[in-house]
Image (tube, rainbow, N blue to C red; front, side, top):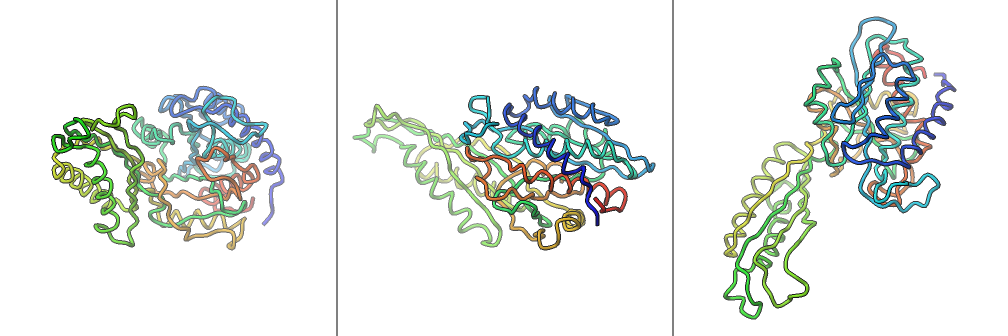
Amino acid sequence: MTFDPSLSELADEAKTWRRTIHQYPELLFDLPKTAALVTEKLEAFGCDEVVGGIAKSGVVAVINGTRGAGKTIALRCDMDALPMLEQTNLPHASKVENMMHACGHDGHTAMLLAAAKHLSANRDFAGKVVLIFQPAEEGGGGSRVMIEEGVLERFGIEEVYGMHNQPGLDVGSFAIRSGPMMAGGDRFVVTINGKGGHAAYPHLCHDPVLAGAQMIVALQSIASRFTNPFDPVVVSVTYIEGGNASALNVIPAAIKIGGTIRTMLPETRKAVEARFREVVSTTAKLMQTDAELDWRPGYPVTVNDPEKTRVAAGVAQSFAGADRVDSDWPATMGSEDFSYMLEKRPGALIWLGNGDTADLHNPAYDFNDDAIIHGLRYWVTLVDQQLNGKTDV
């Protein structure tokens, strides 16, 4: 197998794009600078169609092959950043206060742009490639919104593929698994209403603080006593609000607790929600309080199609080598809104090694530019294999 040296030059160019995007992070659906850069590049590359404004700031490009009719596959990346203060002190660090690319979406965008440039100039394949530049992965469900706005039907997408960097995995390595790969993530806020009063006379009150404490402990029994130990479930209370530090002799009338729940199977997700509601209701009643539950459904379980998982692993192995591709990577309790697309079309999400870097969502994190060439080769090889049966890149 030969290697196209132009890909190395293109990876160097993508490094510059990546660092520009990194310096000007944007959040959720409000990505005017990022979307403008992406659109400008795609149009300059000569893509057959470039459509913006999907899910407000999403961009989709189409590249037709020169070998006539064939299937249509989609390659997807995410573009948004996180509301965090960067602490890398790098020359290309964020110039926007309290915003940073702490999950590598700048690298994902740059790699897919590089693939767009290569594929626009090398169209020896049948069918077409649809490139999806998605907003609002970090909590906004941009993938779901793009689907609701008809992106899959409008562009005739038959298969979808995604890629995400993974700190701790060697640069040049890949990891994937068939079936459930990332957890479904739901959130909750419980308001516990009681009867406030003087802390010296608790018997005259219905203490929501005590009810909340009991509830937090009881909720942990969902994972430890009501689900199969081999079926991963996480229930984390991450937020407590109530009372007043300036009035420590007052039992408040109400408090709030909140957090997140992670599950790996759709049926477990439903069962855990039902049990959660029961625990909240009965615990509140036991403590003579009332509970109002604000249940906030999050991203579904990310489930890789078995056949497309084999495709993705085979593509990575074709140039990285079998010893650099882990096809049985442990599932993670993190969530990813690419799951919405995988519910609608067969496809797979693959991990790309980011090396020995800070973890995702860490203020010291930075996407590893050395990974760009490997992600680019993955995209290009995937298109060659799926639309042309070729792997020679």
